[in-house]
Length: 550
Image (cartoon, rainbow, N blue to C red; front, top):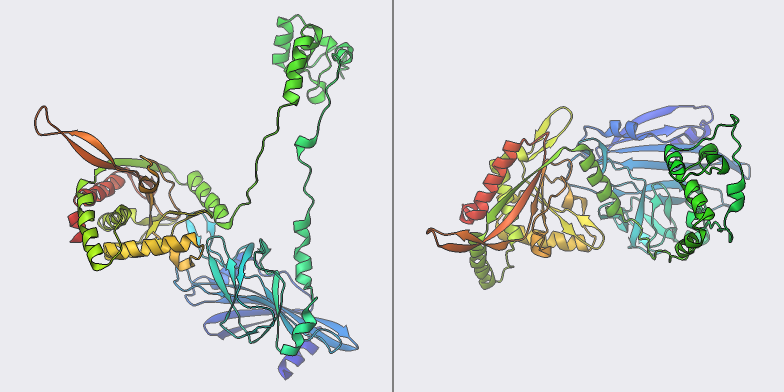
């Protein structure tokens, strides 16, 4: 405390002080000044973290002195951006906080808990760097109530990010005095205060009507008035033919010259209409086609034109409902638009005979039922075959960067799962090394977590290839999927259908079930011949499924 007091007393004389402290493998940079300064920008904060494997923190403290009853008191605001290692497996959420100190006549010491930034964000083309920087988040659920005691490591609430719901842990011991943002609060900006904690239990009641200043600073931008929709602007039609408009002569800045569009001139010549008698409604008084049509309607066919206009004016308005964008919908739209705009797609389609595959599946499910295990689906066999084909043709298990093509040694298969909230792609890691029952169990568990919106970042990060199956659940015959960046390929699986195939004899024929699959590739990484080679390997595993068990 004595050391902190000396810094506070001399803060007016100190302009810039920076020090680097190492604690628990975290880099903490504190910046002291006499006034609030702009926070570190994203580039600087990321540069400070890049290359470190442990969790790192870049923090900024600003100290201002406020005289209260003749005593200089201090308010310290701490804002931090927590980072995590690229492609790391551990992911934890820590809060942003602001600690306020005051004299006895003011509020007691307290801590303002801010909305953390904790979402993987795409920052450069073809390079996904997991910066923990996001503009806003949602409060999914509070696990602590006002008045509860909190300890370091305990979960305060669940925060909804763009892809999942993560837990927000407390960093200091104390009591939860006030919840500023209730459950279900949407689009809370990073750093905006969501709760207040105090050190002493008797101070809880003093924050019943407390409103943090940071909330007031962030709230106004959301209160911008919405402009009235243009459909409410009604233009009354004249009850009589618009003779005044036709009788008026357009005044041209150049004298006798009349300005008209080429189409309007052609229409006027065909109908012998003098342009000098028409007042233009186009830009700068230019006569357009609508002016000629209106003149013709008012000069001879006005009786037939009026009913059509009245009919149009009485046309019923469209009935619609506006559904707000969810976080996952925004991310899906952004990534897929980025993919189609920047990745040179091409598509390869083959038909695979699945008769032997269905026979093997029936045998395996008999064993599973006898042993009390879960049934194996066709999609589980597809995931296994795709993983083994990637091990045989590793060029498809790659990613594009500006300087090199990165070929992954791990075969991690993302499986597309559709939910009410949007499209999720949880990952089955090292699928080439796992058995069919293990793959099936993991896919079912991940799909259930996706539907419950409880996926953790480690459940969907680190994929190297994606499988999207619309055949089994929806009966789609064939489709082309969009590459999931930064991956280089995605497999679209259609439904199996029976076909008539030629037999051994001239008049013989047989029936067989075929399942079409389409491989979408990034042509910068996977050439056509390489994609065809991968499909050949995949088809071999599907049509001879016993080879997957070797």
